Length: 83
Image (cartoon, rainbow, N blue to C red; front, side, top):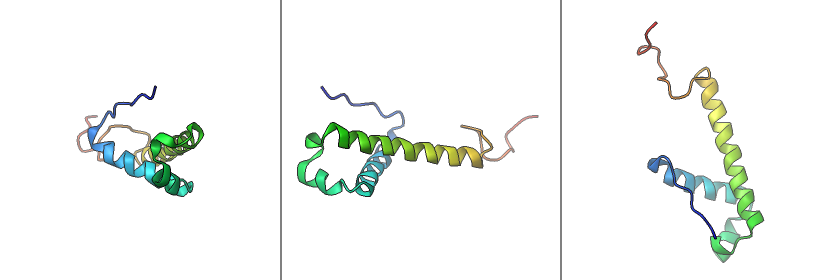
């Protein structure tokens, strides 16, 4: 039985769908999805897409953290910080 994960930030839903199709296209699986639909994709194919999505999200997060000096959820400017 397939389970659906709850998206923590509802505003990210569309972005995650775009990322899913972007990764599928990069892997050459977009035509297969159109022809067969997600429900007929193999576990291996869907896992490959999901794994590459995670890899891209980690790369994105690492780049953001590097720009923010390792701070997560902190304001980008130091104006609001008290010393």
